[in-house]
Each structure stands twice: as C-alpha cells, then as structure tokens.
Amino acid sequence: MPSSPPATSARPVVLLTDFGPGSAYVGQMELAIARIAPTARVVHLAHDVPPQNVRAAALVAVTSRPLLPDDAVLCVVVDPGVGTDRAIVAGRLPGGPLAVVPDNGLASALELAPAYVVEDRAKMAPVISPVFHGRDIFAPVAAHLALGLAPEALGPRLPAHALVPLGVPLHSEARGGEVLFADRFGNLVTNLRADPNDPRQTLRLRDIELPRVSTYGEAPAGALVVVAGSFGNLEIAEVGGSAAAATGMGPGAPVTRVPGA
Image (cartoon, rainbow, N blue to C red; front, side, top):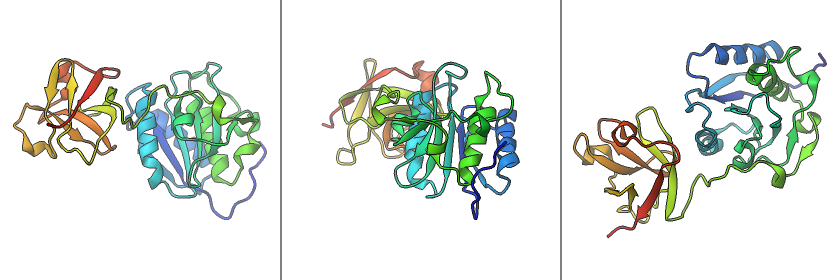
C-alpha cells in the first residue's frame, strides 16, 4: 500500500459512530487507524448516537465542531446506506479540521467544502466488507489524512450544491419543528433553537402545552417540561424519568412553539 506523505506529527482522529460504547466495531476501527498511523491520538466523541439516525449524528457533530482541535480529523460513521452507491467524502471543515463522512446529509450539515469523493482504493483496506465501511474505508482514510494526506488526493471534487441535503434544519428559528432524537435519558431533543430572549417560551407536543423551566429542579418529579438543552435547542424532558417513554413520541414527532405569555 502506498504510504502517505510524511508528517512531523499525526493529526488526532475524532470518532463519532452509532456502533455503541464498548463495541468491537469501534475497537476494530481504532486498530485500523493504529495500523496506518500508530502515533495518531484517537478521541472518542460518542458511539451511542441512536442507530442509523443521521440527524442526531449531525447535531452532535455540528455542535461539537467548535471544540475540535484545528488539526483534527473528524471521522463520522452513522451510515444506514453502507454498501449502496452513496458516496464517502472527505474535506475541510470551517476553521481548519478535516473530516471524512458519508454523503447522506452529514457532509452538507457540517459544511464540508470543498468535498472530495473518496475513490483512491490504495487508501482503503485490502479487503472491503460491504457492511463495515467504518473499519475498511473510513478508518484507513482518516488515518492517511492524519498522516498528512490532502483530501483532494482521494478523488474528484464534489461541489457543495451536489452534496445530499440533511432535509431538516438543525437549529431552526421557525414556529414549528420536530423531534430529532431521544437521548439516553429519554429527553426529546427538538430542532427548535432555544431563544435566550424568551425564557418563558414553551412547546406544544400533540395537544399538550408544556411549561418551560431553567433547571429540572424547578418542577416536581414526573412533570413534563421544556428546557434549553446543551445542544442549544429546546428539549422535552420528564423530571426524574423519560419523556420518550411517557409520551410514546420519538424522531419526527411534530412540535410547535408557544410564545411566552
């Protein structure tokens, strides 16, 4: 396998997947990186993204982007289209970090521009599983990028307008929106941006108007409330419980802002 251009030090590789914490799939990706770039530090951003939920992965990736080291390589594998004709793309993120992601809405959400289609077979594993591109394509490509390979060396340029759109805004100012995912606490994370100038603004889910609180401690156990979550969006929570279980709602459920009185 041709070697990547020499580099004085390897870039750190930041992994984000839906494989699950402690998964052998994660371990095999890390081993694939170590085989090519043994000096690259691997940072595990998260591996508990809800399975196949591209929008959840996009929200985590986009809100984590300002925290990435300038020389990082972000490698995101939330890829329900694995093995199909969907493209894998690499490029530069705003601010300097590099990324390799599936072109399934993640690249456009991350504003990967310019993006280059990953086609250089020499930068992939010798044998590629049709169902595990994370180990056999994403991880090796991320490792070569960590060693100094330029994204444009991987394949043809893909214009920003040609990237697959995510299909929903991640931080919407609109009156109506939807639930993107339920986190591990059962909080329903919406795509509606929390308005810092209207701390009384609440949400309506189905026909229920939910009160806005600043902290979970402001409401009694079992109450359904709206909070400004750590992603900067409004979230629906059950104090001491799971809003997802209590409401039976999940990704795609419509929500509507109710202006503060």
